[in-house]
Length: 329
Ligand code: DP6
Image (cartoon, rainbow, N blue to C red):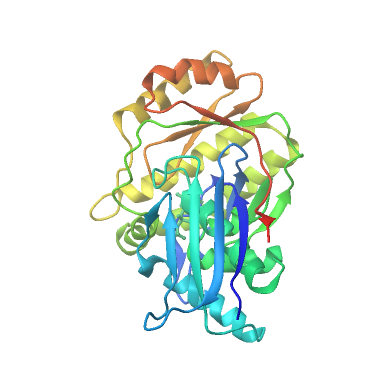
């Protein structure tokens, strides 16, 4: 078998209605429907080589991220699934994978690097194996690596239904050209508790978890209607409820999960002041202290200027971006 390689690109998926909680009986099957936007300004580029496995090293896969070798355990279910797909398609079953991935933004700090990472990896690996990368199959495979990655496979606005094995596109990246996300990085430190561990802890110990899951479909529906109408105020209001209720369930976990830093709270409060002056800017947050602001093209520069002194890295302004793609085969 000769060595084949493929390079791909993908962008992070920022949830407007959040995925937080997994159903039992499958890998990364969400308990809540999430609705998200794919962010153009942040990019993961990944090269995958498919080659015969090295002697004596089974399974012999190797993943580098930003120049550092990654723990094999994190990637095992993903590569197992990939080999199962190869088996079904009668592709060379003894293949091993060597992966080199680069982010142009800080990893593991709540900027959804696992979403773009596994979307790019699934795209490049399937394309290197079989010559094509069908988005439905890529989305299903990317989900095994990290749930939110199944949304990053698609551009624009996406939905990942509770109980589903893959995401779908709701609207493409041209739907709302004026929509902007301003990412405000308040720290470059990696998060202490991964989303995976945090979700499981919340499900297993928080008395608020069932209420969160019960209310999530209504909020996801509200976010989608706001997207349909391109109604920023409606979207921002629903997105705020989603992330704040997600954090409310986390605070009820044992031990409690608190991802925020004082600067995150400072920004949240200042955004409320901006809104009281009529500036359209609503925040959302994920499993980390960074704040992401939902706004429009006209007001994004004001948001950047307001918070620039509080940040540990420059703000990033992004519109809706494309889905994962193959760069070269
Ligand atoms: C808070 O997709 O990183 O960003 O499926 O365990 O890999 P795993 O979790 P991950 O969780 C993302 C959680 C979130 C909300 C979201 O993106 O919907």
